[in-house]
Structure formats: C-alpha cells, structure tokens
Length: 620
Ligand code: SF4
Ligand code: SF4
Image (cartoon, rainbow, N blue to C red; front, side, top):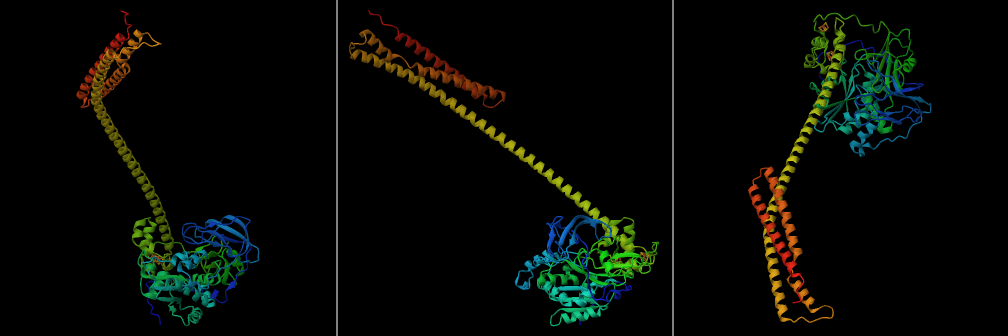
C-alpha cells in the first residue's frame, strides 16, 4: 500500500467524465486534409523539409528542428503537400501560425519503420536520440520535448519516476480510456523511460474515480516493481507538483523543477508514444482526444491523426451546431474558448468540449472583491490569489512577482470559488505575459548594452595597441638614429685617420718612386731602340717613375668632400634638434674641413709635379 500525502487547497467541481467513457476509443476517419503546425510544443518551431506538391509517406519526417529546443513533425498519413502557410492553430489568442497542409491519398502507405526491440543493448543516448527523432513531446501539458525531459542534469539523479494518470480536470477522459484499453503500452513505455533514468521507484498515480483504469494497470504491472497508487479525487491532484506531493510528501521548491528533489513526472499518453516508437518504430502521428459536451450526441474518445481538424471530430461525435454555445479546447478549468473549429489536433490536444449554454454559461459580470479569502483557501500552491489579483490589475508586476506569481499553475481553482466572479487566472496570465515581455525587452537591452560595451572595450584596446605600436616605432627610430649617428661619428673619426694615412702613404709612395727612378736612371744606360729616340725613351721612363697617382688623390679629395658634406648635414640636423652632440659634430666638421684642404693641397702638388715631369726635355 503506497503511502500518500495531501496538498493544501483544491476543489471538487462536477466531474462530467462519464459522458465520454461510455464508448471505447474510436479511430477517427481520415479527414480531407490535415493541418500540421510547425510548432506544437515549447521551444522553437520546426523547419519544413517538403514543398508544395511533394508526395509523402505515412510517418515520413516533413519538418525538422534546427539548433533550438523542439521536435520534428511527421506526416500522419501518405498524401500530397497541398499548402505551406498560415492557418489557425489552437491557441488562447486565436492566432494563425505556419502549418503544412497535407491532402491524404487514402493509401496509408508507411515509410520504412525502424523499431528498436533490443533497445537495452544500446547506449541510452541512442534511445534518447530516437525519441527526439520520433517527434515525441509531452502529451499532457505544455508539450516539453520528451528527450530533453528524460535527460536531467547529471547532478540531479531521478530517484522517483511518476506516471501521471490522475487526469483530474472535469470532462477529460483521454488518459482514463488509454489506461483502460492500452495499459500494456503504458507500462511498456514506462519501462523504457525507467531504463533510461534508472530510478529507485516507479509509480503510476491514478485518481480513485477511474476504477477500470486502475484494474487494467494492476494487471499490466503484475510481476514488476511498478506501483499503481490510487489517489483521492480532488482538483488539481493531476498538477505535477500536487501529484508529487501526494506520492512522495515532498514539495517542489518555488521556482524549481521536480528534478531538484529527485522526481520526474511523465504523462500516460507520452509513455504510450514512447512504447510505439521504440517497439514499432512509429513516430508520434496520432493521439487520443476526448470530444464531449452536451452539444454532441455521441461524446467519447478518438484516436485522431495529428492535424485532424476539430470540426471533423465534432462531426463524428454528432455535433448539434444549434446546441453548441461554447467550444472549449482543454477542460473547463484550464482550457480556453475556441474561435474556430478549423484548428487541428496537435500533440498537446487532450479534449474539446462542445458545451450548451446551460452547461457552461457565460461568466457572470465581474464584481468587486469582497475579501472573503475563499481563493486563498482553494489555492493548491498556497499563494495569495487576492493580492496577486490586485497587483496584476494595478500593473504592479514586481509586487506580484514578489508574491510568487510564477508559482501559479493557472489551475483556476481560485476563479472557480470566487463569489465575485473575478476571472482571476486571466489577470495572472496577463501579468505573467507582461513580465515576460518586459524581461525579453530587458534581455534585449542588456544584450545591446553588452554589445556596446564590448565594442567600446575593443575600440579602446585597439587604440591602446595602436599607441603602443606607435611608441615602439618611435623608440626603434630613435635607437636607429642614435646608432646611425654613433656609426657616423665613428666612421668620421676612422675616415679622418684613414685619409691622413692614405695621404702620407701617397707622399711616401711618390718619394720612393722618385728615388727608384733616379737610382735606375744612373745604374742602367738607356739602350736605343728601333722604335724610339734615346732622348724620348729616357723621358718616358722618368715620367712613369715620378708621376704621382693623380686618380688616387682625386678619389681621396672626393671622399673627403663627401664626408665633410655628410658631417655638415648631421651637424645641421643636430642643431635643429638641439641635440647633445652638436659640439662633437662641430669638431668633426672642422677636422673634415682640414682633411679636405690637405687632400686638395696634395692633389694640387701632385698635379704640379705631374706637369713638370711631362714637360719636353731640352736636347741640350
Ligand atoms: S475569492 Fe474573490 S472575492 Fe474572495 S477574496 Fe478572493 S478575489 Fe476577493
Ligand atoms: S490559479 Fe494560481 S492562484 Fe489560483 S488557485 Fe490556482 S495556483 Fe492558486
């Protein structure tokens, strides 16, 4: 016997479930067209993989998810893509959204299926990848992608896996009928999820108003360690947090998720979808949906292909249009009014109520709050609905948030008991929506600011780097200049010595040449030749011996002048920069002047000598 706990608050509205449980689940007839929204779950919309005119097979993937959170969409039957565009989708706002319209060809021709009967021999990540590929999102709530939910953070070990079969909202019986008729599939899907998560405890929670489902499940779990826990009927015991509290005694912390306390909840329909995918290879292309209300003659549950227009199901349930006062998608507590029956069944559609005026009358006009406190007594989340209402109405969103507005599960229990007919949940939804918009804008502004600051930082960094490079270049230039100057000074000093040595060497050379010529002239009598007169021959030899090297002296003079010019240039530059080496350079210029003078004198002297030695000799 499973130990149970209770949650605070809760209500007992009329159940109105028996109307739709009198008949077994009927398989819906194939409609003329199927409308498949690209977004049927929390996260990003899928991206279409087909074009108008394409023929597709049953189970073929026709829309794929990108990088964001989501699941793919599959063709529920074989046929031709008729349209890709905006169509009405199930949403409280009555909005349109992108949909693929498929015209069935009636052949029900399957694509190739790849079941995984030996899934236990695979890696868990492979099975999770298959669950993603199968397009499975939670069939019981907002449609959270199942593969993501089955992959909790590593540090949050799931100790208890709960299958939520409470189905506490009035009128809805889709899970009840599924458990009655497909208990084996329910348990099979639960085993697959348990194999992935390896919890210590698996439990199926069912309200005590479903005896047939409880009996079927007990048969199905025979011989396993799976518990079937029968919980008292009270709305909203099927709320995730409430069922967890009933079955474990633990409360999910404010703002937290069940995994924070080691618990995970999955829906009955989701378990069946997982079982069909893994054991038969079938992606999620259909679901059980309740069509009920006093305006239909034959209320019941239908196995409907995803994309089936609601009108098509209402027709099969015997809709009496003249009786239908209000169409509600979902239950009377948490559902919303449908503005058109053209909307399709999506993965999260569990019920449509075609209600008469007496059955679901228009809400009474809103009255002033009388501060009776009934709303607080009914709230299963132990919130302060009255204060939340005031703050939401006064657009004091921060105060509402401070009172844990986001813990509100929008169960509608407070609205249900309010004697002033205040549509409290609508105020909370409005406040949550506004806060989300503000958060999104704040996030956008923060991102813009971060981008701006990052750009400023980058520009400043680039400026600093530029300045650093400029300084390094200036430093390198100064060092090069200093080096050049030092080398020039060194060269100037060396050049002076070289020039002086060269000039001395030239003079010594000339003297030696003259001496040699004299010596040779005295010792060797000049022999007459056939080609020159003796006087001419003697003159030629003397000239060759005594003529100084004019080319070398001219070269020395040119070099000395070039160095002088160079030194003068450096001196002027140093003076312009008021450098420290001006005196030094002035001395160097003066020395170079002297050197030029000496080179000039040496050249002049050499030229003179050359002129004398080349004058014609007197025959005397
Ligand atoms: S139940 Fe209605 S009237 Fe009573 S306190 Fe709450 S909001 Fe006010
Ligand atoms: S709708 Fe929100 S505030 Fe009202 S009873 Fe439910 S959880 Fe409490």
